[in-house]
Image 1 (cartoon, rainbow, N blue to C red):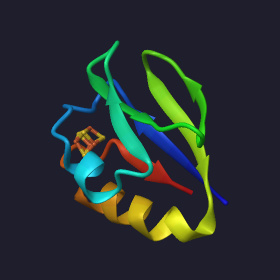
Image 2 (image 1 turned 135 degrees about the horizontal axis):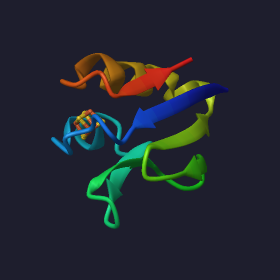
Image 3 (image 1 turned 90 degrees about the horizontal axis):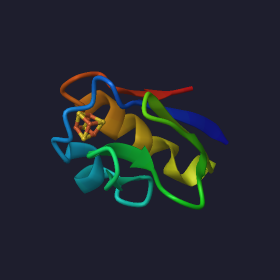
Image 4 (image 1 turned 135 degrees about the vertical axis):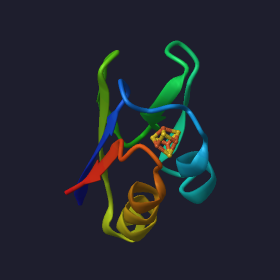
Length: 76
Ligand code: SF4
């Protein structure tokens, strides 16, 4: 398992992470920013979306984090 955190304050909703890891990230229609998808989402606020993902998705999450133009995704 790995923890994924999206900083919704710095996310510019460019869509790169949705394209690279559609199983993990999606647009939050309320905020217009990225959030972690169900069933992985553990908490969600205006500031950040936090989730827990299984090992088989960690590489995709890291790839999205490395490609995010604003460095808004953290995988740990
Ligand atoms: S790649 Fe980064 S800036 Fe773009 S939508 Fe995802 S979290 Fe937001």
